[in-house]
Image 1 (cartoon, helix red, strand yellow):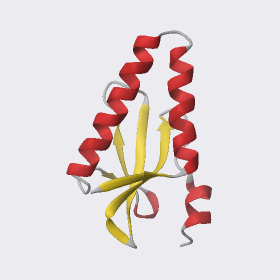
Image 2: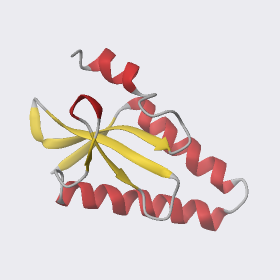
Image 3: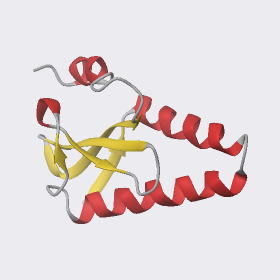
Image 4: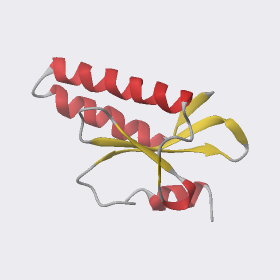
Length: 105
């Protein structure tokens, strides 16, 4: 399996890491390591995550306040698309408009 980031998800990832780095470079590195470990887990167990809206799946990043919202691409079931790196305080489904623009329901 492989993965691709939607542009907005990659921006969220970078912004979160930069925000954390403002107070602690070490915590920012830990965040990045945990995101990578979560992506590895998703790739190994793509259907074992919490089911979400519109056929998405989500997985909590260990010891972080973020979730990875993802799905398997219908056109390529060997590819996981990362739709959002979502902070738990953001409204659930805030990313739906970007999902619908790319993949209309």
